[in-house]
Length: 154
Image (cartoon, rainbow, N blue to C red; front, side, top):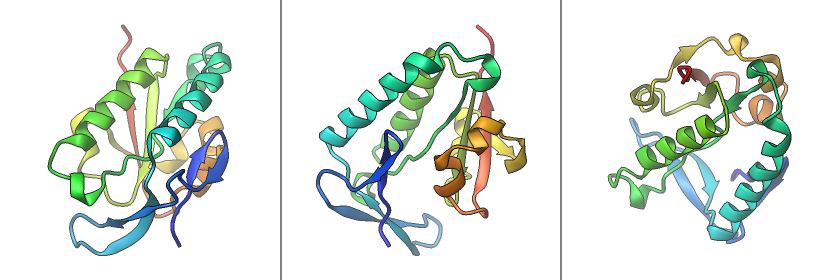
């Protein structure tokens, strides 16, 4: 079953209504289908993130853990380092917004994220607020690997 986008706490299809296949990079096995988002979807996600940031910026450092929810590159765009640019930009934005820790769950990219400082972490070590989020509870199965990076104090 194709996945939906999670924007402003709601699972919705992309504005295009289109999907692309997600393959395991090691085996090329078809894993799922992801929504083919467009600029309208990106603007909606950015607006939701900006609205959420207003209350998040007053949170304590312990509450400022961020979850990198999804990073998917269409097979036709692979090899152009788009994934690296997306990850770098997402991490830069998280740091600028005050995140002290970033977590992610992955089934296929455990070898991709160490180049950004991520290391494998026990899923139970995630902050309680993060573990209670819908994204953490439902986005990836229990078999997904959790990874973590902590930003050094400036």
